[in-house]
Length: 190
Ligand SMILES: Cc1cc2nc3c(=O)[nH]c(=O)nc-3n(C[C@H](O)[C@H](O)[C@H](O)COP(=O)(O)O)c2cc1C
Image (cartoon, rainbow, N blue to C red; front, side, top):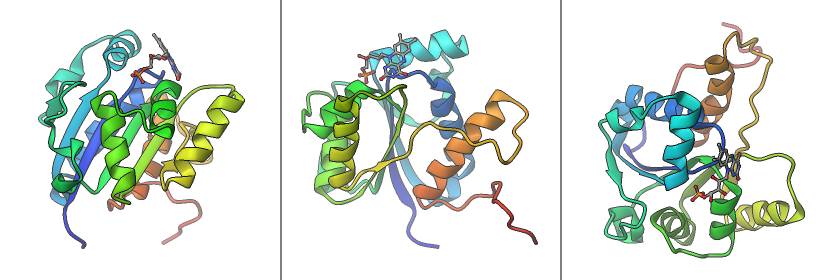
């Protein structure tokens, strides 16, 4: 097993707070592979979480949460050596700020740092349909080295609940982050 990971999780105000919740739940379970998780939420992320999930349970996670304008957070600098940043869900607003290097809050600054340090940025973008502005921003972030992992669930594992459906996205995110986990694998027979 490679070194334990230092991970930034950013939650923004796109629909799909369930993705953020499942991601945080999964990271808790994988704590033996992780040195540190820092979390930052936008204002709208909290609002959407309360609206879609009906609670403020983001307050209950034992990770360190940083205010969205806290540029003293370690991952606001490359020197802190966070390996991976996962933005789930990622709004088109946040995507646009990252695509254009507008580091005016901790989320866009942390993403800017991850890209400049050539580390791993995973953006679980959510909106539909896409405008050409969105498509150009998706392209720009990809060209800068980021991974766009759209919040598009898959159905071939025959999920029975909304949670199972959303987990199909988070399974891919966990794989992309280089964490080892048990999950459904197509035609992977014993
Ligand atoms: C209930 C709700 C759902 C939203 N869903 C989306 C969405 O799916 N995608 C998106 O890009 N913005 C969505 N928005 C709008 C963003 O929250 C808004 O553009 C915000 O300014 C994004 O900023 P942030 O990335 O800092 O959270 C939604 C807003 C609300 C209130």
